[in-house]
Image (tube, rainbow, N blue to C red; front, side, top):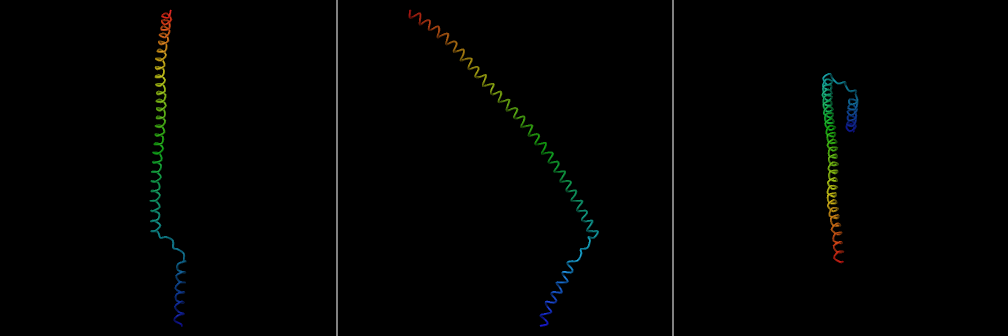
Length: 125
C-alpha cells in the first residue's frame, strides 16, 4: 500500500517542480540576441522603405497612365464629335443637292406643263 501512495506523491512533487520552474521570470536577452534582433529590425525597416518606394513609384506610374488615358479619351470624344458634325454636314449637303435638283426639275416641269397647256388650248380652238 505504501508503494501505491508513493507513486502519486512523486508525480505531484515532479509536477510542482515543473510548474515552479516554468513560472519563473524570463532572463533578459543576451547581447548576442539583442544584436541579432536589432540587425533583423534594421533589415526589416530597409525592406519596408524599399516596399514604400516601390509603392510610390507604382502609384506615380498609375497616375500618369490614368492621365494619359483621360487625355486619350478626351481626344477620342473630340474626334467623334468632329466626325459626327462632318457626317451631319455631308447629309445636309446631299439633301440640299437632291433638293436643288428636284426643285430645278420641278421648275422645268412646270414651265413645260404650262407650255403644253397652251398648246392644248391652241389645238382645241
